[in-house]
Amino acid sequence: MYLGQLKAKVTIADKYVLNGVHSCEIKRSVHQIVQTAKIELPLSVVMQNYDLRKQINLSGLIKEGDSIKIEAGYDNVTRLEFEGYIKRINYTIPLSIECEDELYLFRKMNFKKSFNDAPLKDIIQYIIDELKKQMGLQLEVYKGMPEFPFKNFLMKNGNGIDVLQELKDKYGLNSYLISVDGVKTLYVGLMYGYKTTNVKYVFNRNTIATSDLKYNGFENRRYKATIKNFNPDGTTTTLETGDKDGEQTNVYWFGSHTIDELRHFAEAQIQMFGMPGYKGSIDTFLTPYVEPGMIANLSDPQFPDRDGNHYVGTVTTTIGSGGGRRKPEVDFKV
Image 1: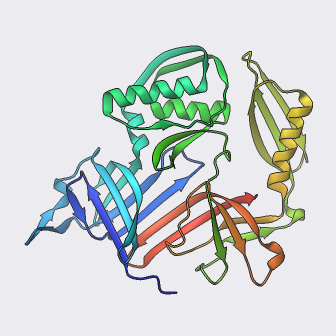
Image 2: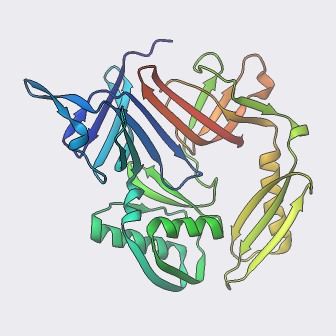
Image 3: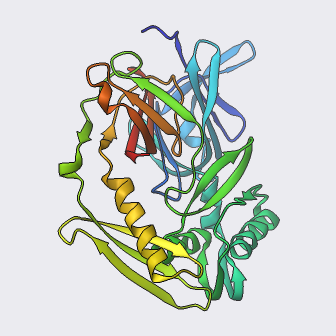
């Protein structure tokens, strides 16, 4: 399957442009707050300035906090794969650069503030507004986040990532950057609450390998669920249901609900994870494009009864001398 010549472009600090990398790995996932990239480059590189070409020591010119953009594709059709900042430079051979997306700036400012009877949206908007004033960060707030008032929420002089991590650990609210109609937006919501478009994979046609993908039938799908509901009055209701010997899954919910409604939500979660389907990852080329939150239609001509839509939770993209690859990982059948 020939897709054209692989092209890669890395722009650092808006002035150093490299038309190629030794290797690059980009990881994006609904399971992690900050999306990451790791690039390996020669210690010295050849830069082109109009008609002049000279070798420079790149490691002496770039620094932690510099902006970085990674673009890749085939022939002259490339897309922006990653945008963010350099978090760490490891002076090894080759030079290793660790990067984080724009949420890197959340680490650079601490917050000390208390909220009483404040909706989740106001807490997130406060962080973004402060970062906009101090650092020029341009982000929108996800409009579909749960409408839940926090009776008491205290920012204990931690940075912005600490706040998002607390929301995840205590309330099951995941946070990560998404693009909504081309606008960078901070998603804050339930684990699998964000879905985008569809992508189709036909095994052995537009896939490279499927050996890391496993199909599980009913016999391998036994779950128990613990649902934790955060009530408007600040109390919490906890309920457990499902197979006591099954695999544990946690469900978080918000608002005023009866015990029967909570049991229904938990059983729906068990049914979602318990549906026969694929779990694991496949290896593909850079095309078709896929990102976390997309629904992958997986089709195996040898086993057509297994075809179906699956939620993509993680995508790892690699670029290097061996070509460009994506590894989408599906979490469950939709």
